[in-house]
Length: 342
Ligand code: HAH
Image (cartoon, rainbow, N blue to C red; front, side):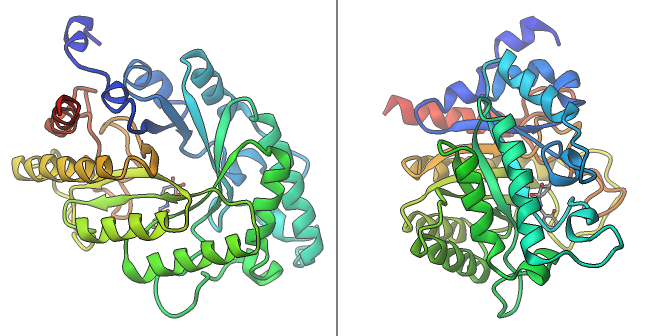
């Protein structure tokens, strides 16, 4: 990176000091390839994959901490905060957890024993590094009347696994802030289900402290009014809020085109306007929002290139493929200098 160029670029997280932390999801490759950019602009890190069940605990007697440890060491070296992601999820979890050695399903009690042992080991290992955990990820059903999505967790343990996960995490690190995290969080139907789930956990005195709005958004949706309504509804529970996985896809949800090798000028302009509006809204709610974490650091690597459309590149973040600030970065920064002058 040319340092003369870099010197003219203000640090993203410093622009939001006093409002919320600015985080990025990272992995062992990006902390090397984009290490300077990450160290400069973000003051909080989340492991994109390395702290998920399958990454940490591939077999009952095997923990693989190398990738997660590298990220924690990078965070320590650069004085960054860390969020933990994620303890209970229906994806990226290994089959052994739900099975006996002969392949038959485990009992409910044995599943809870294994869950407790996993949470204890992982949460205690990173106690000094991680201040907040996504304890339960994505258990709500997107569509239809059912509250919870089908999963092995639900099949074997019934809905009680959710409260148990929070209780085990709280026992392992009583100081950690514990989050329920989900996507499509601003969709009114799913929003109300998330609200009802978390409300019922609170009524049972389950230790849940925050709601993570994943915020995998695009240029067109969700609408600002829907995002605002979601923030207000979640905040009405008296919990802390974070945007945990923000990105702004340049494609509509049902747009399947794979021909673009770079974003069009129109897309970039729309993205600038969208990011400016989003951060204006987030700034309004800074008393409720503690951190805004992007699901990546720069457009050269994002999970959205190839997902959900194979062979389609995407450009959802504030820095381009060469780690230079995009127009969207300057719009987000400009907005903070205006609010701090008033
Ligand atoms: C998130 N799911 C996950 O929380 C995160 O761990 C992963 O790296 C990327 C996105 C969002 C999602 C999904 O995985 C599948 C369908 C819809 C949304």
